[in-house]
Length: 233
Image: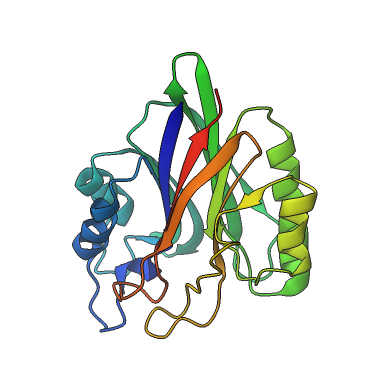
């Protein structure tokens, strides 16, 4: 039996609700959970407002993880995007850009060795703000999930609520399980959570053992969400 703990979080460039920007604080919160896999959104890379920090590299070092980064938005020499880190061996990785309006969105994935001769894929994304845009993004994500027979985990800030068509598409068309479905814990805004827009999902290869929204965390405007999944023998 293999258990994976995965954390997903829109870190808002490391900027907390107190206005202070600290990637070290973000890493400290993540390390409390001892995750095997971390999926992050709004990771900045050499932006002026981020102090020209290379946040992808800093996170990789602070978390001691093998990591991949997809820059989706460009601001001069800098930008921001999505990041996946793993303490498990990363065998390969890939990414695509999704149909987007104004702000470019993407899908990043890694393939990891979870036990001898058993591999899994982990996907991370951050969807757009417009309903039609998210519908096109959901369709392409479902295609990507269907493209592999490997056990898969899917995380991200989807900017959509449970029961909406794009979320239902993942559950019904792609056959995903929603870790947060039972407790319905809100993740945004972190100071007074009232919306559930951040998700951790898995294919039917997995069984949910536990999931927690880390309430009281104000290191970003979103709350971190982690889930523990058990892979069937």
